Length: 488
Image (cartoon, rainbow, N blue to C red; front, side, top):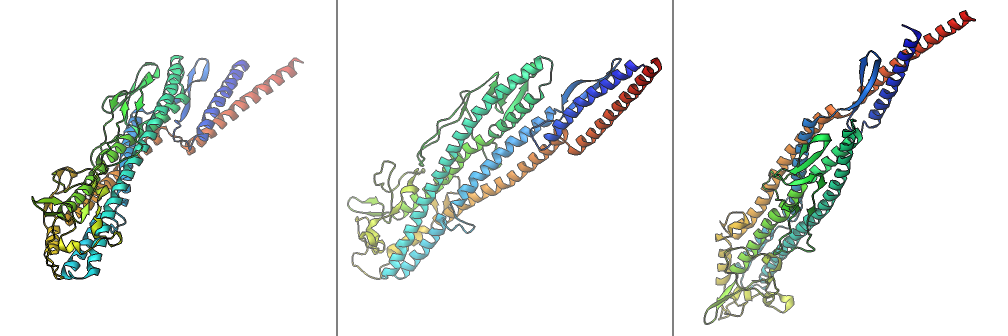
């Protein structure tokens, strides 16, 4: 080997180790960055010696697609479970202390006590107070459900805004990838940035990726709607300021196409947006319908009939329509939206409002009739009939999602069971999606992430190469000194 050849070899090693050291140092500094994909300096040997020909990126497209799928499913499932947990809190703790079913059971007991002591003012007042507890629980539960819906609506608005921002940033990163690829390089930083944005987008709405020439990428929802194709497509949504049972939320539109809500406890939602729509438009309204059916049944069950010609009017329980007028005895077989939010105890039997609780015994609350015309203190026929009615099977609207041919207490308990079953199934599904995401994350990280031990070992190898080049350079230096000494 000539001195010139030796010098060239040493120079090549210094150049290579310098590049390799820079790459490895960059890997080590990003070892805790989950959005960083490991780089590697690729060395090729030719007649001119070894040299770094390119910096490769440990990209794994198949694992990335699998991770995106697991991520978007888990995001939807966890969002659904969070919404169900919020709805469950409306019912109180594990004993469902604030559930209408709990207060209905107490009311039935108080009504039983009143019918056994029909002359007792204390028993009468106890029944009226228990009835007020029932209506308060229905009012509060209905209000809380609408708060959950409004919260979901606000979160939808926030995520739509975030999604539009992410898509705009995705365009910038995608353009950088196309530019870098077209110039013959590997735009690793731009690819990392694009992958990071893609991960964030997929947690909001599930997307499929299509790669094209020059590293270009297009995004489509799982049902084929264009999300990004050269330019970001507009995602639109109009939030509601307030929610009542009668108000239906606005839809989310991607490129003018409505985004469907998820279905089922093991939700079909791809991303959090569809799960939020599911909570707002399906689960919470169904729970509201069940409360409305309970309220409607109470108004009908305790209504009074009398007069000429005979008419029926609400008795113990009254309600207001959506326009604020006093509602009559329900005659529809369907759900009366929002009746649970306005049901109350008739002021005619509320003592502190000047009412007489004994009117419940006499069946004279509405003023249509007085079943106890003889003012008999032991009269209990009406109380007996009301107590029996509470235990009789009724027909509830099938649109409320639970069994219809049961008594009102069973129906109220079934409503709790419906929500708890939904939440239990969603919890199991969330554990499965979380496990799938964890496995996908591990597999993707193993292939593309930075292993600190491997990088430190590689850095030691580079150091040894550097030392070898130094020895070559020292040897050449000694030879040159010897030649100069001979020449002198």
